Length: 146
Image (tube, rainbow, N blue to C red; front, side):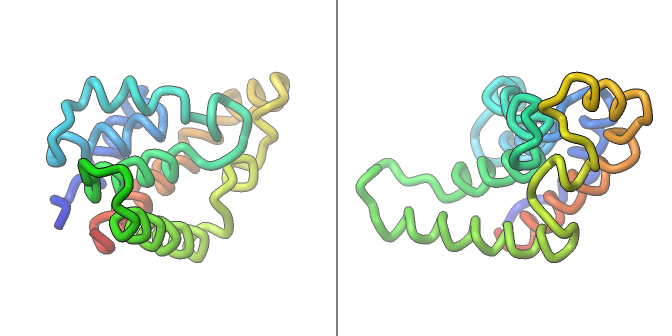
């Protein structure tokens, strides 16, 4: 069972971490990986994977937590892999039920792959107003399923 770290993930996001960095680095220390390394690993996944608007960074960060929490030394362990996939599908289904999508562009309301729309999203504070809930939801769902 994961400790309650959703609030810490939101706080990290508020301090400037991307959504993926905030989620993964909040939970990683409890799973044996230091927060700084976790933030580095998660850094390419913010703004829908490197500002492409694809999968939400909070979702990517959460999926990394699931993988870390369920890790097995034997990469050929099919049962372990199936458990990771099942937990990941469960996470995605609940996140989608709460938010309507796992796609950053849908969640934020801007096509982040377009520089002009990305700038507009920042100017309109779309990330500051929408993403804290997404980060919190990711943490709450993780805490429930793990």
